[in-house]
Length: 225
Image (cartoon, rainbow, N blue to C red; front, top):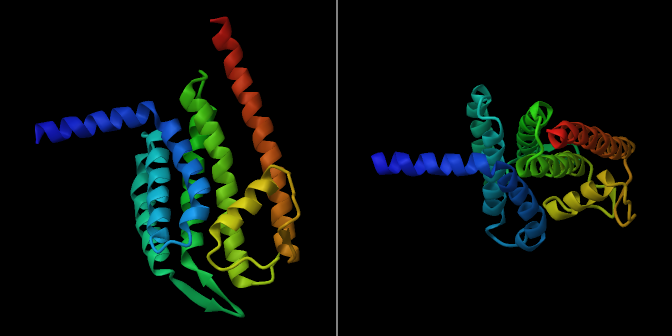
């Protein structure tokens, strides 16, 4: 028992020391490997594993916010069940899946922890830079969850239409929109989706401006010291 508790303590210490890298790695792996894994029978479990990694690394960012951990892991369990069973309910001409709604809540929770840590930091470290980049990717992934809800409710919301479980296409559209690249191969057609995509582009520009300004402001006194 003592050896087991010592090993758990070492894992927690290692995770806190490298929390930003773990969080960024989970986000990048989720985005890169998803196109390869989404057609595999084990794709739901891949999404669950990456989601659990994001949530665990996000919780390690702000260990003092323990009041939010229990509902967070409850959300993760609901998310896992919804992904594996593809739980959905008919709404009008489409279906409303539960997984993207719960996934959006988890992304927003991890983003809250990241922003809480970034606003408190006074030193620029490897974890701080990794947290800032992971936060940018998580905003895009959160909007992708929202786009999936729109695609479920209105199959003609995008041109060409995005299939129900095409997560990689939604992530691709969200990242290119947030980065203001706009290749034009996927276009929002529904008026409400157009406004949300424009709002995402504004959020991307605002995030970059605020985070870079904060990091530069924290770096200047650190360099003088």
